[in-house]
Amino acid sequence: MTAPTYELSSVARDYDGRRVLEVAGLSILEGETLAILGPNGAGKSTLLRLLNFLEPPSAGQIAYRGHPVRIPPPLALRREITTVFQHPVMLHRSVWDNVTYGLRLRRTQPAGVHTQLLRQLDLEKLARAPADRLSGGEAQRVALARALAVQPKVLLLDEPSANLDPYSMGLVEGMIQSLRAERRTTQVVVTHNVFQARRLADRVAMLLRGRIIEVAEADRFFEQPSDPRSAAFLRGELVF
Amino acid sequence: MLSGAWPFEAALLLGSGSGELWPVIALTFEVTGMALVISALLGIPVGALIALARFPGRRWAVALIYTGMGLPPVVVGLAVYLLLSRSGPLGDLGWLFTPAAMVVAQTVIAVPLVVGLTMTSIESLDPQLRLQVRALGADRSQEIRALLAESRQGVVAAMVAGFGSIISEVGAAMLVGGNIQGQTRILSTAIVLETRQGEFGLALALGGILLSLTFLVNALLMRLQNRTPWWPGR
Figure 1 (cartoon, chains in turn blue, cyan):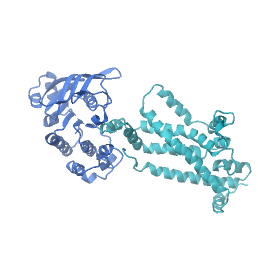
Figure 2 (figure 1 turned 135 degrees about the vertical axis):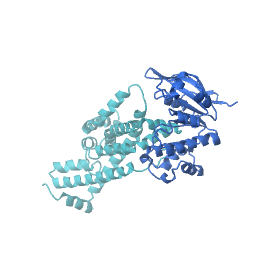
Figure 3 (figure 1 turned 180 degrees about the horizontal axis):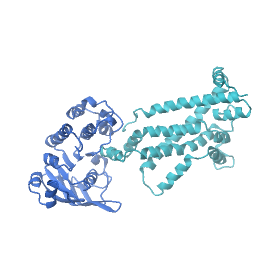
Figure 4 (figure 1 turned 90 degrees about the vertical axis):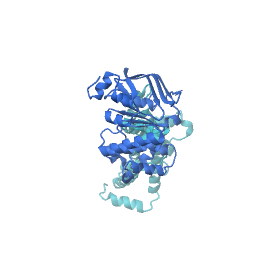
């Protein structure tokens, strides 16, 4: 049986006294790709920040590889996990410097694998370009390369292909799929794109108004969602 | 007599090998440079800390810094004078009417400017940047250095403002330095002296030299704004 990478128990997150997330229980298995589906404002990005231990839960407990984690976690643990944000911020330097930034933080030298990463994401020609002048699609690919350069055990992706053209979306999704196949990286993909979730996920968790209303294997979720609100969301209806 | 040919007079002064002018220029650089370095070493980390930390009384601290940014140099001079005077709490140091006292006064003037402008430049960064850097594995000090590197234009502007406030400052330098020839005379106090003696041409020439030096230093600082920082973990 695969050991869970994360186990969330009664996790809640409040902002200014308002509860934006309340997860009674959720396990994320090692090596799986879990899609978090849900409409805008459902609490998806908040959940990712908690999983990256960038902020503490207001209540409850998150266990990572079987051990409850207190915030701030040890640096070594935090360095096993990284996030590609929906609107990645580029450092004001070259694409190459951005891609290798996480390595420099770890005092590690870039290797051939990082050049290969640029090639796979079609960023080779942009390596010396200033990263703050890239298009949205290019910046998103640089952000993914920057995250993959540190070879994380857990990769959290927040709307990884929002506003991407089909070419960039194909490159990004291809990388996500090869990570699962080749490195068995645990991945959590937040998206409101049903089709993308279907292409990428092993399992799907449906998040609505801060609560997980359904978790299921991807095939079953898309064929026979057990919650009528999930079914409505999949039909493209407005759900609350 | 007011001379319209002050640039020539300045050039003559510099070229004449006058035994008086070069020590004044050197001391101006020494005092202002030292005060700027100390202000940067104190002000940049404190500015970063206040920008990033949330603590009780933070708003008061910010209000205090903004007030400090408008400190009248002559009031600073008076306070430092009282501190360093023989009967003052730091009188035993024997710094009054020495370049050390001028460095102290100029540091007090420049620090709030460096702190305040560093703070605002970090606060104006994209709030996502901090999360981004942390998510990529930065520890606390790497995070602060990354934010400083990203706001380097503002940080350098803070140093330019700090430098500008002290290179031409005269009230504090006069009070705590005494404008003693060969010991504590700097360009700004020399200008005051020459003006009082009616040597307007000489005063203008000294002013021209002061402005030229200020321009040079600012040009050097501006080069830093566009350079990739050298420090590790950026």
